[in-house]
Amino acid sequence: MPKLLTAILTLLSVAAVAQPPATEDDFFKYYGPPGSSTYTSFTDAFKDAKKGVVYKLKTDQPAPKKLDKLAEISSLQILSISNNYISNLPANIGNLSSLVYFKSEDNPLKTLPATVSGWNNLLYLKLYNTEIDTLPKDIGGWGRLKEFEWLGNKGDTVKLPIEVKYWRALKSFAIQKVILDTLPNTITLLSELNELKLDSCGLNVLPHFWGEYKGKVVGFEKLERLSVSGNNLISLPPTLWYCRNLRLLDLSSNKLTALPDDICRLKSLEILDLTGNSFSPYQLAVLKGLLPNCRIIY
Image 1: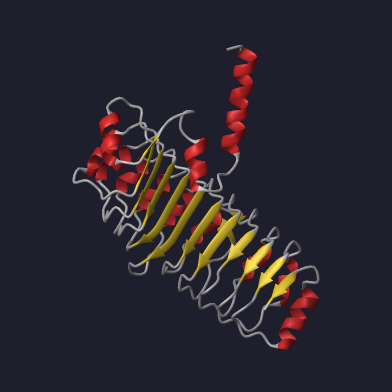
Image 2: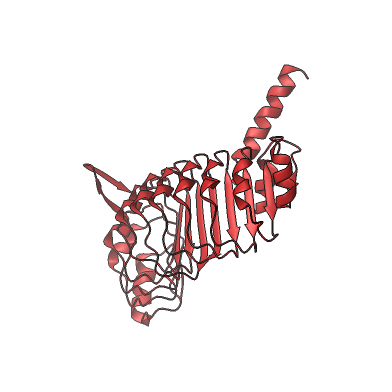
């Protein structure tokens, strides 16, 4: 193949991967070598793992007794497991150092092993309907993580470790229907964050959105979308008003009765959702005056 054509195809491939995948099918399309197969069976994946050719595994089969064989698939980049009756991942799963995308759906996961720190190349993590009580501090090793999504958890109150501060590449942080303890203030170090969702998490207070760390002021400079729907909030931290690029603010289904005049600092705000709160007509009129270019939903 001519060198020029090869270079063009390489550039096109890189550009395609650079686009954020919108669906799980996109992940399976863009990652792994062109033409690589997606395995839908643990048995087939384990069998071919010895050849080093398994890059994608998506299965809803019941987990085999020797689930630790997963760690032998060193080439695995995409792993999506659902309804497999898996409550614990094998400790050696941290050997999957090529893993880029991990998703577990409708598995009663109790925890993640500390060895997941070995997922140094992880970009996307999605957990749906788990039973987790704690997350290991070792998740701080996911320095390249771009998206973290956790939807639904039946475990006790979860305390996020302060080590989330090492997710410096994170752009989307979404936790919904997971009861959380207070969030660590180190979350403000996630300076690349564009989207933050903390819906139905039982929160009474929010962490500060800006703060001082090692003598420097840090905060969510790039945050555009914030959703804290379905919590128990009666007020907002004053540092929220420093998020000057915020475009969407969802405060629905909380216990708010008023917002301070400082909300006018959010010059970029386009949508403010206040449904399910107790704002008086007077307070709503004040907000409309403070935010003349914002659509206020109530």
